[in-house]
Length: 308
Length: 242
Image (cartoon, rainbow over all chains, first blue to last red; front, side, top):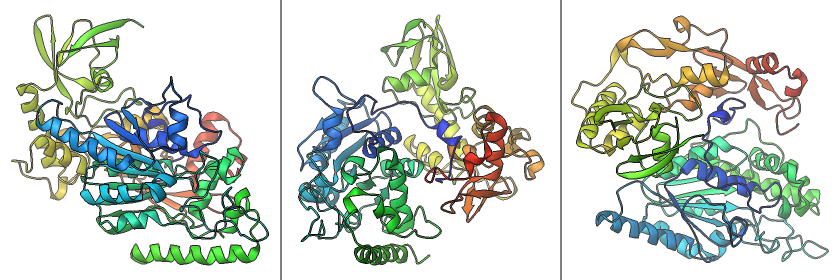
C-alpha cells in the first residue's frame, strides 16, 4: 500500500488536529508523525502526553497546537492517566452524563517516557486491558533536554552522556526492543511504523483505534538535530532504516505476525549509518558487527511472520 | 462568505452557507455514520444513504442525505429520531445482506444493533465481494486523477464499477487512488516485484536508477508528463535518491 505516489495523497483528509505553527526543529519527523497519527484518529480523541519534545514544542504557554482535548502529564504516567480517562468516561457514559459515542483514548510518549521512565505504568495499563492506544515516538535519545542517551539508543551512537572517543564507542548497550515487550503482554494489537511510510502509518493507527482493548504503536521518528543529519534528509533516513532492516515494519494482531513492508533486498546497514553524525566515528569492523546484529534480528522477525 | 445559524439535535451551530450538513455536524462533534462521501471529492456522496437525517424547515420534514444537503438559515436537523434509526437500520440490513464480507459494513450494522440480516446473503453469480456500488472510485478517477478509466456498469442489481466490458483498460494509469478511496476496501491492488495488478491489468513499475527499487507505474509517468509537461528524466530516480 505504500507506493501510492501522486493521486492518493490528495484524498487524505485536510482537517488538522495537530496544527502548524508549533516550535519543532526544522525537518522534525516526529512532529510529522504526530500530525499523521492525529489525522488518522480524527476529532473524537483524548490525548495524554508525557513530557518530551512534542509536549514542549506544541504548548508554549499562551498557545497550543492541539485541536483536541489534550493533557500534559509527567514523564512516567501518560498511560496511567489515559487509562483513568477511559475508565472515567465509561462511567460517565453509563450514568448518562456524557452522550454515548466512540472516543479514542491515546497516550503518547517519547522513547524516554516509554522505555525508561514510564515502563512500569505502560506495562500496567496494557495488562489491565483498557481500550486505549499507546503511541511511542522513538527518536532514540532524550532529544528535548540535549541528546542524552536512553535505553532506546542504538549500539554505537554518540550522545552527550555516551560520548564517543578514545575509550568509548558511544552507546555500549543494544537498543531495547519495545514492540516485543508489548507483544509479550498478549495485547490485541502491536505495530511498528515510520512517518516515511505515511499511508502505512495511518492505516496502522486506524486499525489500532478500531480494535477493542489496548494497542501499542511504535513509531521511529527521525530527529535531524540529535542524529546529526541534514534537515532535508529526515524522510530519507526513515526509509533507509526500513530498507536496511534496522527498523522492520510489522504488525502483530492477536499474536499473529505480519510484515507490512518487505524490501526486495536489504540494503547494507552502512548506507544508513554513514550519513549520520552520531555514527561517524564507527570503523568498518564496528559496522560489520552491527550488520550481523541487524541480520540476526531481522531473521527473527521474518521467521515469526512464517518464514517468508 | 455568508454565515448562518441553524440547529442540529437542538444544538445551535454556526456554518458557512452551502456547507453540507455532515461537515458541520462533524465540526461540532455530532456523529453521523457515513460511507460514500469524501470531503476531498466534490461530487461524492448521496449514494450509500447511511447518513440520512431529518431536515425540518418551514413546518415540513424531509429525509435527506446529510453528506450533500446544503445548510440554510433556520434549518432544523435531527439525527437520532426513531424514524431515522428505523430507516438506517433497514438500509444497513440490506447492505449487510449484499456485502457480508465488508468489515466496515459489518461494524456499522453492529453499532446499530444488527448481527444477522433477515434477508438472504449474496453469493454465487451476482456476488460483489465488498463493493457497495457507491461510485466513489469512479468519481475519484474522473475528478482527482482525471483519466476516467472506470465507470459504473449495468443498472440496478448488477450495478458495479469497472473498466469498459471488464477488459484491461487502455487509459488506466495504475495510480491506485480508487483503491485508496474505496470505503470498504473492495478494489484489489497488488504489487509484486516490478509489476502492479489492478483492474485486471498488469502495470510495469519504473525502477529507480540508483537504488533499483520499483516505485511508480510507467503509465503514470506518461500521464504526469503529458498533463504537467514535466521533464521525463525527473522520474529516473525515486524520491529517496533525488
